[in-house]
Length: 219
Length: 219
Image (cartoon, rainbow over all chains, first blue to last red; front, side, top):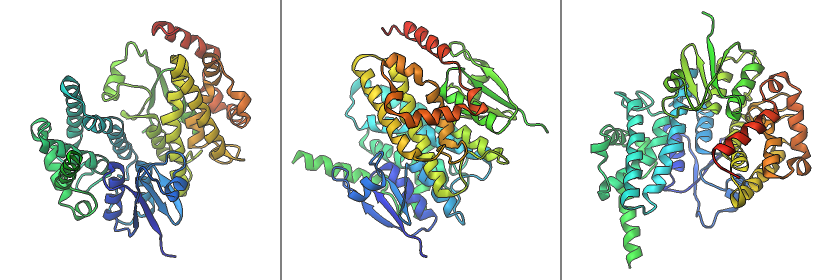
């Protein structure tokens, strides 16, 4: 029986982007269903009744919710190529720790950056964000990716947020290169991979989207 | 080489209780180190420099932080008996989903029931009851969330059962009245030595919260 894989998605959701990259890395064919977040489909409400959120991976009719849980599922089921998790239990635990760190800390800064915070409040957000990104830079070290020679769990967890931070960089809110010099080259390296560039919008594409939104609001 | 396992913990912590239960279920010999959270040990600060929190599992000198990550590490490393997670990838993903649900929602509502008052406390009480109802649905007719034996979700949730009478006293409500299925499950878990010896005495927990509320000036 052929595998039926569906992804309930929202194109700019950082959590959904993680799954799109994973599915592309593993060469998994799937049907992408774009959700309207203010008009959620019956399929979404039925597949994720607890949180009613995207992304949801549906494999042969069975839904898996929560992006990191779904990434683990993908890695276990399609285990023939592009491993996302290390095989050693200790290294696995460390990868999960840093992905959890991204979820706990980085995601909340991402929200605050877009919240319209100004002045001193914004300065505090920026400082906290850079402190967290510097910790992650330490974890990256001299490796091309957090996963080593190839993309791993932490790369997938962080990249969508880092892409959005690059947009702020372009708007001049801050300079990522000055504050966290390892992050922009790492983002670039990730986007050089076809599985990434074909799955998720680049910082340039996200920037154009924000400009368009702002212009349309002014009209 | 004999395994050296150390658990950095704090006796009332529901997160620490999870690891105590898992170590006991698997018969893993370990050294228990009680932390004074007002005066954290150098070992804790070195082992969990990012969050500086307990519990931390240290296996042959290597620390694993975050209770759900440590539970998975324990399950993968000591995989010869008492499996916490099912072997089927889909069932594993469901167990992880519900454990994340407990971790994100239940623990937080429980804390707010004890440490807040007025409207915030009411919201937390209702939130906690809603969570328990959802969890009862997930448990269904099974003796444990893990089926015939304690599983990942049981170990994650049962510390909250250990705090139940404390939530009821401070929240001035009865969880037992509305949720007999949850209570029956909790009592079933308590019949296991690994659980009963890992959960502190409820009176001791109550006295601890009384002191905590005094310190935080909540009355």
